[in-house]
Length: 139
Ligand code: AMP
Ligand code: ZN
Image (cartoon, rainbow, N blue to C red; front, top):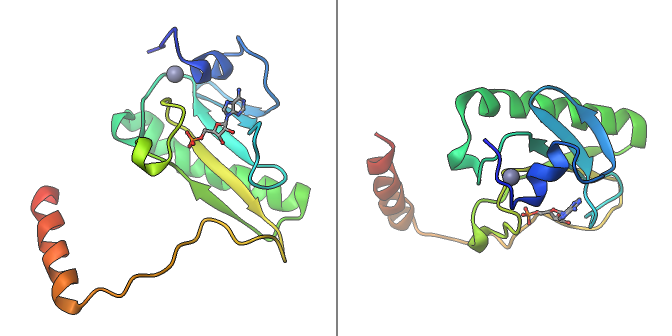
């Protein structure tokens, strides 16, 4: 379950040093080298999964609880008022490292706007058509 060419496999398994804040049997949590805010962390599974669609059940069942734990620790230790979870899947979505990771981004009162978008204004018909289109694949 390792990819010898993957930098996050090496970091998650302690072969490349990183500022680690948490470790258990399945995960290592490190600070991002290019943080969006002070304390920005990355949750890395020790096994290699390309993205969310590739995760095994055991890992996916644990990652959200770990994100909550990390976010709660950030609020207590750093005094952030909240945090965002960001998880990019695919190049078009901004993924640059193809080993599943979950960003935990502390947000501070008065901090810069981020993780936001200009809301669209689709018609009811357009929304209904899109809902039909996606629903078919979810059955
Ligand atoms: P993504 O764009 O979702 O694939 O995020 C990749 C993240 O990994 C970026 O926020 C990078 O700053 C971060 N990153 C890349 N290499 C390292 C590294 N060696 N140590 C810590 N963070 C890294
Ligand atoms: Zn990997």
